[in-house]
Image: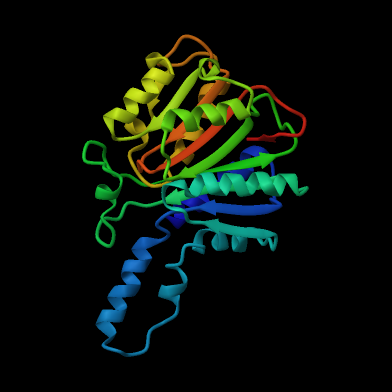
Length: 275
């Protein structure tokens, strides 16, 4: 997990030509759970004896953000968000707040790994029909347009214990002065057929794509969906459609009671956050 996160970070910074971000923000639901398991195994095998603190230090959720900070030698704002399946959305929201507070370049990402020994991840994500996976995705939120491939992050929100999926999505879109008909592509993750039916009714069925078919399922795979959505926005032709998408909505409903919404488009604003 650390290797994935660090590799993605260094590649992201290299692509943007950025050496020091103003903040490092990471979303992870499970943290470094393989290290957590190793730590618990050592507790059991020590029979009450002394333990090295290293196993505990590397098992904490903020290990990823801390390791990135150490590698870059930065002492700027460093934060880890762990809110279950909405961890990445919370990290993005924090990044937007940093932008509003005057920061220019924010490193935001997410990482989670496959682990079913300590936690029954498959049952929690209802992933019997989708393979469990792991992944890491990192982005630079910036107030400045870097190149022609910059994409605008219009808005991001997270919701818990939602009562009406249609009403929640419509309210989110309305707050951004658009409607469901303005969305060119909906990237979604959900396992309940009734939810898919609601999305199909709200949006055109041809606009729906389950990104878990290519990412697999893990708690922060909406970060992968954002990466995939950016690629779709900057390309002229796509394998699934002959038309260029200009506005994409990511609907993260992998856990039914949670909902994460991320809206992106290619309309570059002077004071917006970009890739």
